[in-house]
Image (cartoon, rainbow, N blue to C red; front, side, top):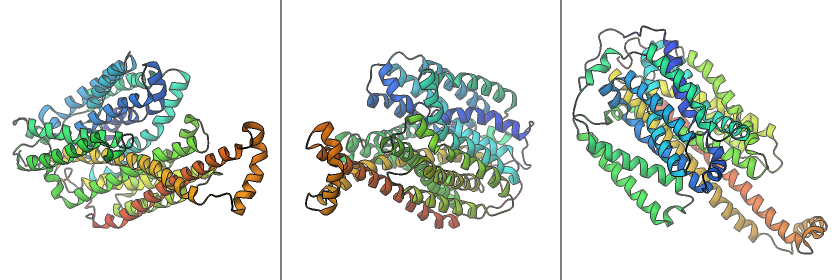
Length: 519
């Protein structure tokens, strides 16, 4: 690769905010699709003669294909041109959305979702790289705030929009809704976007097929392992053991191979920059907390408080409002203040939010859920925008596409880990607490005698003299689930708090003018 950089800062012909609208219209659509169809899984399964568990492969296939493309963005952009690549991605994603909505069998839907994931995977890092290059250094914080709104708010809105479309129309409209957005995004990108001159310096070179194969295997193995681990009882399952071994082996092969290639498909030299490496670690944690808590909240409200799916989604939606509010002001303040301070405060707010959610009980109402979620949204905004800006601050312009792809890949993989950890903590925690509660539940205690006297008359009319035993079993299971939720939120709180000190190991943002990443 030619390592030379342009002598003068590159400026696009169009207003940067028009460019931002063009690329983010496609990116918001793609990120929304990671969660919009999740609430429709029972409807999809019923419509296509499949179980809900089988229908989850529709989600897994999309995430695997999406993750594979993310780190390849830099190489493909420099080979074929970023504008051409983005146009092709939008076209593939839009066509696959149409085909997914029209699918008549589960196998068809899985195939079309793989195609959709391949088209959508590159949109996130491409949008981030374009925004970083199009805006001058003093306005990159605002650009990352605009980008962050799509990345953080879209997964929160997904279940709400998906639930409304499914209830009022059909699950197929969770895919058809992408068609007008995709057409509009294609037109805007075609009209407005242009490739910077230094992107054209890396054309040509031998294709790294071996590196691509290693990447596909380790990313795919990890994603499927995280998605199916709890259902398969984790490492008690031969399938999970096999996937875990594939993940470790091919990840090592991938790192060794890419580190020794002249033209690697993923340039791992970006990790020599300490700030980028540490930022990537922190964004992985952010992804885990974001998706982990988004899994816990609706489940708690549905399983223990009896809320419908749509209402549960609405109860956690204020998190999006908090994120948008904090991103709007933090983007403008980054030009004047040290972004690391905002990231540290953000992690502390995330910790506090999860601590508050860890104090929930069976009498918790919606109002007690809303404020911690707003606080979590504010924390997400304070972490994401400065961290995305700081991560690319010292990198050469020609490496920003690759860095953005890897950065977004790790955030998504962190989300997979967060979801897997949350569901595992709930399942194993419920079993543990139910066992402990049962040990301390016996007929000779005064509390038990008082509880039995209170419950038995009502239960006797329904299920007979032993009805109180049925009520007791249900109460113990309910309390065990409640304690498991508390444990999961507590773990999330400590993870966030542990991340805060690492922020100040990042290099202080330079804020110097010049081409992106050239200082």
